[in-house]
Length: 345
Ligand code: AHM
Ligand code: MG
Image (tube, rainbow, N blue to C red; front, top):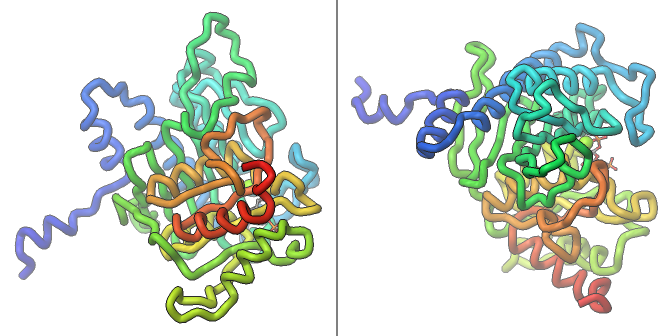
């Protein structure tokens, strides 16, 4: 028979319980951020259900419209966008949402709500048709107090260091939610039999150094010299530093980052001829994932500087990203400094 202590240590903690327990550690907390995280958790469960049955309900495929970047929008993107927006709208705490699927800011019913939420409702959507993991990403800011109360886009242009919480949901072989409020990184796995996210890890730490590099090598010819040198460095044999590294690239940032968080290594989406400023969006892809990786002990830079210190100039702006284990990021930065950055340092 199990001892009492073993039984106790195996007690399942749901996402909602965990959020409330965390909130109780701060006596002055209003509970609004907790509510917001629970709203996102609920929307994620609904999206997860639809992602899993997409093939049979015909939600797959292009719906004929394009998003603000001229890319074709899959129906599931729209579904995820609507679910997240309506979940956030219901609890009247969020004043505006900025989503990859919407050109401008989306004002919610609670214009006086104190939170601003950025999101990529379904990242990696080109992978939907082929049953590869996709994810939702979110990033939460507090609205800054202003005398002029009318909500404008500028209210949302805050650097990543001001995020109060960020996270992602990965719809993979299981559905996993990972988030941080700046006090470490926690992860939850959806148990579909009871419809609850169950705590799986409450202090995620990324390995100091990893032997996996993750980059779309198709753009090799247009990379900066320092980056080419780094990828060569990853490929050279050296027993002491566990090289050659392994290449892994899923093409869904959430999935690539989740692997990087667990196994260590580096994920890179650099500037290239096709994407001179990188492809990924600062506000709803790079900042939230940088917050998580930093909270887990990793690093995230744009090649020169810390991503989260970048002052945004527009809600959909792109930025190059080098993110992962601290030793890997420092190494690529060293080579970029020797080649590209030398004039500017
Ligand atoms: P999306 O938001 O349109 O899905 O695009 C973002 C995705 C990321 O998930 C992924 O890292 C990247 O695009 C892959 O791009 P590429 O196919 O150029 O390698
Ligand atoms: Mg995306």
